[in-house]
Length: 367
Ligand SMILES: Nc1ncnc2c1ncn2[C@@H]1O[C@H](COP(=O)(O)OP(=O)(O)OP(=O)(O)O)[C@@H](O)[C@H]1O
Ligand SMILES: [Mg+2]
Image (cartoon, rainbow, N blue to C red; front, side, top):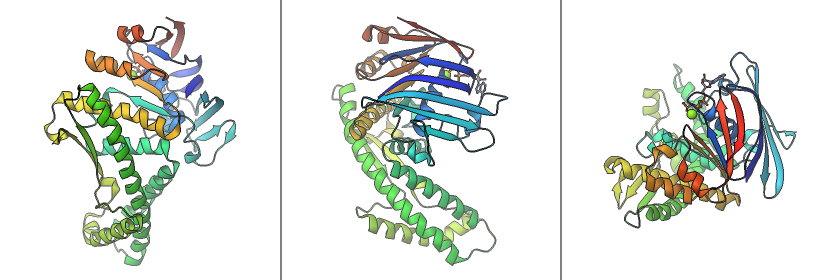
């Protein structure tokens, strides 16, 4: 898919912006703090209705303003589309898809597919489990709106249950209502996560073998907090049982201690745990394989190539990995932010657009 055009109004440091994009390479060039990542963020927001940098929508509204707006025109499966999001400081965001207002965020999904790759992502193997859960969540939400619904329901119930656990007297019948719902949404999440991990494992294993000339065999496995069961009904029953058993502990700690909000992903290279024993290079290569697999999985699941946003990532990779990345990116629309022209990229893709960013204004040229 392609992002053909963007319009911004009072988004971060952009007061007003209107740009058309190249179908291949869009190089976003500028000094620090000029608005490069802000531009990527505005593109990203149209896929999930949320930023990758902040959980607070209002932070994206330009300082001192009440509203901020992003509008993109897309081309997908040979059809034109559009997404418009208005962030309002005092109220819920307003989202239109193809000119029609939508009620639930899950209706926004499956319109714009984006993969973002930044230096942070290179640390995903080493980082805390929360980052890996975020990765799965972000990815699954894009390809499975039902996952988005399960996850947001699970989070709502979890929050309610945790608030209730903090009360002075707890009625077990009321707690049971939360427990049943937690088990239902939680089991569904576990199954979708496991299924996704198996797919991403298969694809990234092939990519990793290519990058390392067949020397390293990468394996990614799902490490659920509650034991996995193949049958969804049994999973739900086991989940409920586990929650019941941990009830005393939960009451003592005044929080829900068991469930997919404690899940993780594990990475192995040649059967050795990469998080504990891998070199920094191995961890970064595994992260690169994972990112590239993310692109393939979106294409496989949706029939559309996602748009790839590379935020400052080129300079973080050594020559070999840079080359591998660039070679993997044919036929995909790229947005690359950089403070210096990446020569390798330009030689591989002979024509593209350059956007020179300066203090929230952008000048467009070609190369
Ligand atoms: N809500 C906002 N309203 C106005 N300006 C903002 C807002 N949020 C961030 N900014 C400004 O945007 C600028 C940062 O932009 P951005 O993160 O896009 O920089 P960048 O060009 O990616 O820089 P770097 O190369 O350091 O990553 C900062 O100067 C910051 O003050
Ligand atoms: Mg930046």
